[in-house]
Picture 1 (tube, helix red, strand yellow):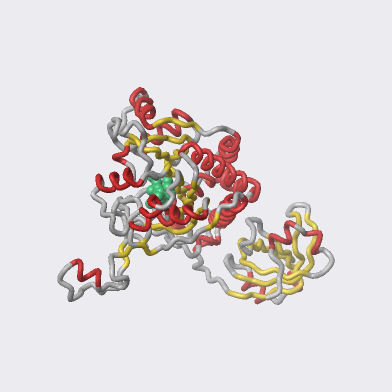
Picture 2: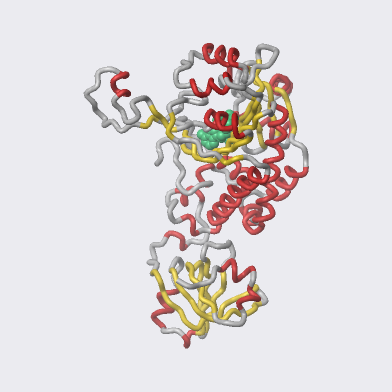
Length: 458
Ligand code: 4AD
Ligand code: MG
């Protein structure tokens, strides 16, 4: 259907003043007076609506009646005029109703709660709130690709179906084609007769494949969905989330921390520059002070603290925590919140965690107790990045696997990278949906993507 996008018209109106234009979209609001009707039209290309002015004697009465309900899709032909209030508006000469919208359309009401909108995920894209979320989501994804592309990283596609558990946390979804009942007597037989002739699952992280790719391509990143069968019913956990995982050869822990900080600042700056209307919307309706927060993040250094020092800070905080603070235990959300929100009030990298609470692949520090791992905690949200230098010494890696009772079976290819020309290397994983929460101020991860998958909900 030949027509012009509303974003084009509002951005470059001067180009469209001389001839008639055709616009298409959905009615956001409509009102009429005796002689004139006004329709605010939105086509999804930008947050702003285009105002249509309809002289009632120019359009058939029944067509106008059908066109007015909120949610109706229409096509209008007319001339673009400059308007003091709206920038540009269209004086309509021809109006066509494309799709009627009956009165039970749930978006009639001006403002719904996000909780209600979550029950109609397929329709919530027609609100300013979700139009803004998806605009920022799209720009953010492109900023990420641009960041790595400009720096000669190769974009690698890792498999989604995998046989190995990268994080070793036992949170893998199984992939099978077997029916609920089979004739097989043993586990071995069961898997041997399954589609892949072995136990398969959905990837929890592309890291292991990413490391193998980097060990030849030098610098890579992956950007894809990853899956965790965590029973965490929180505003920050998805069963299916989008994950960015760069892997960099010849980078040690300090190098990867520097890259992570530079990367986070770059993508925030990009969104601030390219989504001004959407960020202004979030600043007004979702998180007061959001713009100021983001501007401070891009213009200040992130903090850095060792896990051991973090434990001391928490102990001296005088706070009553629900979970005890002791060296060797994982940092709980309440601890992370205290460190990022109250103690630093800005993003902070915690480094050198106890080896026992982290994954097998992390570089063992000389103290024999900690690993060169880092989490980036941000105020209001907690962890958005998990990363580390990788253990590149074969013997130490094997030792760490044995200590965790991991088989070497299934990890042969990974181990080969340590056997043939092993190099120091590091990487991290950024949760894309969590990053979107941080940039928009959206409080629940279920509101950052079209169809969120969480425990008990598909
Ligand atoms: O800290 P995680 O588990 O680290 C890894 O998976 C490493 N293999 C990454 C690497 O070094 N290549 O996950 C990384 C990030 C977290 O910091 C968080 O932002 C996000 O992924 N994440 C989740 N986001 C939403 N829902 C979940 N269930 C998530 N689990 C992790
Ligand atoms: Mg983590």
